Amino acid sequence: MKKKELLKEVMGVPKVLNPWIKSFTKVIINDFKKQNNWHDEGPVNYKNSEGEMVEDTALRMVDLEIPGKEVMEEMVTLNGFSNMKEFLNSEMFKNLPLWRPDIKYTIIGVPEELYNLESLGGRTQASIGAEVNQQFSKLGKGRVYPNVVLKLETMVDKEDPLNNFEKEIQSTIAHELLHVFQQIKQLEKGKPSHFGKEMALNSILQVPLVSDLQIHWWDYFLNLVYLHLSFEVNARVSQIYYQLKDRDIKTTEDFIKEVKKTGVWDQMKRLENFDSDSFIKAFKLPNSTDNPFEMMEDLFKKAELAKKGVNIKSEDEALKSLMKLWSDSLMIGNKGMKQLGLDITMDDLPESVKETPSKFFKFFEKRFHKKAKKWKKKIYRIASLLQQDREQALQKNKN
Image (cartoon, rainbow, N blue to C red; front, side):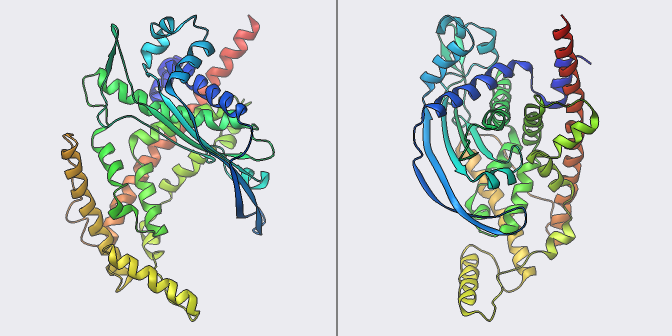
C-alpha cells in the first residue's frame, strides 16, 4: 500500500497537513523565543517517582497571542513564497484555506522532575475552533475558512524550556489541525462543518448540569465518553504519528516500547480496561469522619451536590440521579442545537439501559471496548507507516 493511502486509512490525515503543522509549530517557537521574562510564579506540589511529596516553584507566561495577520505573514516566509498572493494561490493554501488564524498560548514552567513525570503528549492541552456552523468566506475569486483560533497550553522544563518543546507541541498541533481539516472537508462535500451527533454529544458533555458536579469519579467517566468519539480517536492516532516519526524506530519492538510511553496509549488503555462493575463499586459519596473539619467539608460537598440535583440519601440513589442528569442534559443540548439552527437530535439511551446503574454503565463499557479495539488497531498500523518513512529516508540518502 502506498504511503498516502496508508496514511489516509490509518488516520484520515493526508500529507497536505504537514507544511501547516510544521509552520504553526515554528511560528509558536519563534514567538516564544522572543519572550524575555516569565509573567508570574507560584508554588507547585507533586509526588516524585518515589512517592514523596515535593514542594517547588512553577512559572508562567500567560495569554501570549500571535494575531492571524502575523501568522499569515510567517506562513509566506517559512514556506518560501515570494508574497501573500503566491501563498494564497498555492496548493498548500488550497488544501487548508485557513484565513488569518489566531494563535493564543500559555507556557507553564515546572521543575525538571515534574516535567519528566508527564508522558509525551500529556504536557500540552489545546483546542481549535471557529464560529458555530462556520462557512467559507469569499476572498477574491477563491474561498477561505476564517475565524479559526488555536489555543494551546503547554508544560516545559523551567530550566530548559526549549527542550522537547517542538516535539511536544507539534503532535498536539497535528491533532487540532486534523479537526479543522475535517470540518473543511465536510463543507466541501456540501455538509455542515460539524460532526453531527458526535459533535452534539461532545457539546453536551460541557453542559454544567453534568460537567460541574465536581465529582472526580463522574468527571473520569465523562472524559471516557469524550475519548471514545470517532473524531477524537482519529486525531489522537495522528498525534502518535507526529510524536514518533522522528524517533529511531527500527523494529516492531522499538515501536511498541515508544508508543507505550505516549499519553495517547494511556487514553486508549483507559477505554480498554473500563469495567462497569468495578467502576460502580468505586463510587462513594463524601463520607463524614471523626475529624470535625473533614466532617464540615463533607457536609458542604453533599449540600452542593443536592443543590445540583444529586440524591445524596445513598450511593445507589446518587447513581440513579446522575443517570437522570445525563438524560436531562441531552434534552437541554437538543434544545440548544435547535436554537443554533443545527438539525441535530441526540437520542436518549434506551429505557432498558436506564433501569439500573449496572445496565447504564455496562452499556458504555461495551461502547468503550469496541472503540478501544479500533483505536489500538489504528495505532499498530502506524508502525507500517513509520517503516515506510524510514525506507524512503534510506533510499533518499543512497541517491
